Amino acid sequence: MAKTAIITGAGRGIGKAIAIAMSEHGFDLVLNSNEENSEIREVADVVESNGCSALVHIADISDLDSHEKILGAAESRFGVPTTLVNNAGVSVLSRGDLLDVSAESYDRCQSVNTRGAFFLTQLWAKKVLEGNRRPDHHYSVLNISSVNSEIASVSRGEYCISKAGTAMISKLFAVRLGEEGISTYDVRPGIIETPMTSAVNSEYQQRIKRGLTLFPRMGDASEVAEVVAVLAGGQFPYCTGQTVFVDGGMHIHRF
Figure 1: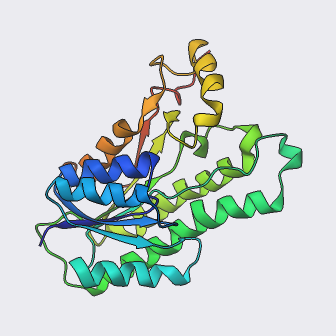
Figure 2: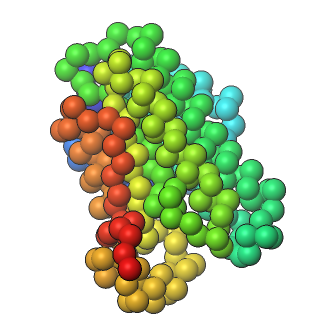
């Protein structure tokens, strides 16, 4: 049996890059997207061209009823996945004054970035613990949170709050699953060039020139993906609960 991972939000951006990198590291993949389109099918084609199997599963992880279906489809095809990558995420409906944040935008961030990730991890963990684990495989959860889990951005406060929750999910499951030998990691991207950041690309470029990041450039999704693939591969077997910043040094406090 090969290593198998579920990747949520695998159709574009960081999720797409993670899928490609993990297939290069020998993972069969369940590729989740919230919509059927050519992008997710193209990702599946790349995975299979790398010699791994790909199963596309369309579901919105904010719908908790979809979680059993995602895990069920994965188990039917591959057995219980060794790895869960909680990558699916949404940003704010509109950037602006913190005093104008709407309940709709707040709830949207929470439902996908935090609530969906928590309950999908809970269900995956139950299935892993109930099943017959292979001792030669590394089992892990990787949550893609953000530097904004601790760095405040008042123009998108609801996003920051949701990602702070994602970071706490990583800590909580690290504690709960540590005794079972299951690792949990919190990967925190900084300013990564993706479709989600394209609308504010020029603004970020100007701030980077003024010293926002230590590396004077935006990050590439592949740089986040390689970190995820290495962690999922078990190259750091005595590590759990770690936070890995992929942000060009943005999180370092300076004066």
